Amino acid sequence: MKLNILKECEGAGRIGISGHVRPDGDCVGACLALWQYLIKCFPEAYVRVFLEKPAAIFGELKGFGEIDSEYGEEDPFDVFIVLDSSADRIGGAEKYFRAAKKTINIDHHISNRGSGQVNWVEPQVGSTSELICDLVEEGSMDRELAMALYVGIIHDTGVFQYSNTTPDTLEKAARLISYGFDFPRLVRETFYQKSYVQAQIMGRALMESVRFMEGRCIVSVIDRKTMDFYQVEPKDLDGIVNQLLNIEGTDCAIFMYQTGVLEYKVSLRSNEKVDVSRVAGYFGGGGHMRAAGCTLQGTFHDCVNNLSLQIEKSMGQIEKSAGTTEGKNGQSV
Ligand code: AMP
Ligand code: MN
Ligand code: MN
Image (cartoon, rainbow, N blue to C red; front, side, top):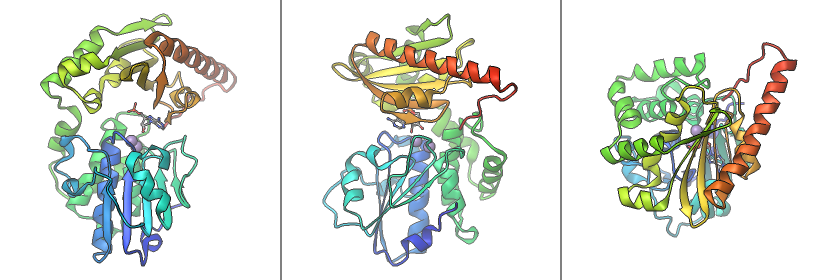
């Protein structure tokens, strides 16, 4: 089902857009692309994006400077649209969602059951930005919009590396780069480039990582003290978990950083041998089969013990089903 967003927003004087807390490239790209599209199609309307302050690397995308991270008083929105998440993960913007006359939820997380009055959730699609790309009518696409969508797509597909990349993803990307922006620089500067401290803390996380389950799992943790020492924020830790998964023999990578005295934000990545969306879902989080996250309470060791039980369970289920349905590998998004 493709949503007709222009029809859904017809006559709306006030439109709000938001995405998940700690917004990643897909979330920022999708929100800014939709914002650009709606202000173009409804020049009279008040359209606003509410997001936790995204990383400065996205500063080049049109509309970045207009993002509201203050969550002040607002009259009720006629339409409020949540992207790349369900409405319970949008932090300070949730109050606008609750007060809105009409709510729309567009996402690609398998764990999202649809939190709006109107829902468009496609778990088999690699990024929310791809869904937004489908919404934009041909004549309205332009260079700035294409840039935002391209950034969203490369971030959630790992620059077309993950198995959520489809022929359709590449066809969309081909169309987007035809708008003539400097995509190699965008990929380098928003995806691969690290600041010196980001590289240092990644090095430290890799050096202190621990393997278990005969090397099939790897875990690393960064505590509050270390984050303070390097003066880094959670968004500076992006990419560490992917680097852990790159280590030979690893089926499941866990990266944790401390968010409270006995609380950790957990990022999980896997190959086809573990369904981490199930593991994260068990602990109240969610995500995709090969990339998911959750928040856990307890000591580091409690967290790892609890996670490893669920990881083992998922590995067992997948091994069993691979044995019964020969040749069928775990397709993921
Ligand atoms: P992260 O490891 O936080 O980068 O997240 C990996 C994937 O899982 C992303 O698609 C996130 O949007 C998703 N995710 C992370 N945490 C949660 C959560 N608590 N609930 C639902 N999805 C999540
Ligand atoms: Mn996201
Ligand atoms: Mn996404």
